[in-house]
Image (cartoon, rainbow, N blue to C red; front, side):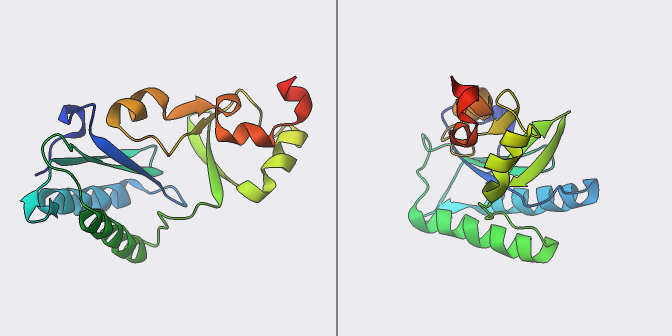
Amino acid sequence: MFIPFNEISDQAKVWVYQMNREISAPEMEEMATAIETFCSQWQAHGEPLQTSFDIAYNHFLILAVDENASEASGCSVDGSVRVLKELGDRMEIDFFDRGQAAFLINGKIDLYSISKLKELFNAGTLNASMNTFNNLVTTKADYLQNWSVSVAESWLARYLPKSTLA
């Protein structure tokens, strides 16, 4: 059962999927339609799940399940992954590329290869006060409060020059 994102419980479990590129407005509409259709039919062991989603910055898809109503099973989560792989193939989007880190720069998302981060921080292209994203948040409340964080407060701090941390 689909519920608008602003109405689903703050305790709802979330999964954040970072896209490997920005999507256009028509692609966002296509994605929203496909994901809402999936959410409307998403079940665990034959029981409908209370579900929702959000698309943020044209770069992130956030799926949510209110497990206070019914818990998502491993099979139901696998089903969501299958849907995202199919949607990604159709739209030429990779929801599962973990080789890039996203940064919010001037209101826009820029993606950088994780293998280049140390070099980019040393050169000053990126810095500790920039915002990045903690895609490992687990609840809607956590997503709303702790998803966008400064580099210094994130796991990316390990790539900062030592002098920055002193």
